[in-house]
Image 1: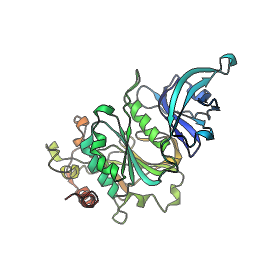
Image 2: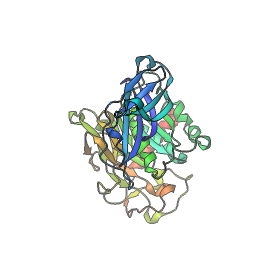
Image 3: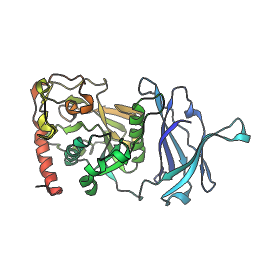
Image 4: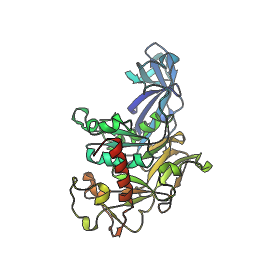
Length: 361
């Protein structure tokens, strides 16, 4: 069976959705899956769309399986089922390779609150970065944040760190303590969380920003200071799967030292190179239009609609503070020679805004 990382009930399509990965040699996209519900009902899966673009040097591929859900389960908070492969060559042994007694949960109250623009990311012990990341992006138009927590649940402090933002309705923390399957890399966990987030929110989020917590989307047109300004009133966006964001590193000359407690990430890193990173070398990130995305991997849509690149000088760019990321101290960075205080100016406004919202003095 393919490795299944997540499964949930989708009331919008009256389906159960399974998100997982497979090896190149596994032909699960050619298989017929069967969902056997705990009341005895049986549902054949929809045809599985083949993922033709691998991720990572181990040639892993995505797989999404969907089964129709009996109406009796639409209002139940959870139920159990088994997922099997149909053995069409031997009907005496109809079901083979079975995941048994899977507890399926509803994502919440339906209809859920809709968001025009949300963000989704995965973190592991990155608490110090998150308050600034959330406050900055909320100020420029992001309505909600889905943060997948890869730390072991008993060791995680993320919910405590994000409690003010959870209580204020900005943040949902999703437990995601997966580890790579045997023979696979951490990319398996990264790709699985991305596609779980996409499929869970196809019907309650229009646009989803997929960046890391050391990456910040910056509007570049003074007449369009919010991210949604670039996603509305344009009929050519209807069939797009993504707006691609050019990466632009920000840092400090000569890699000067800093203290996390002294200044914000914006104030510590006010220099950049003269131009953004070239496209298509594994640095671009995306704002996804979820209805047009089927499979996604870190830097681009694998299967879905067309993509358009935002102009990093006049529309949107992605400011990348990689120098401050403790997980990437040896990362190859450019020379930082051009002073650019534009992010500091926006952060000053955002911080003042959240000081009032959260009652900070």
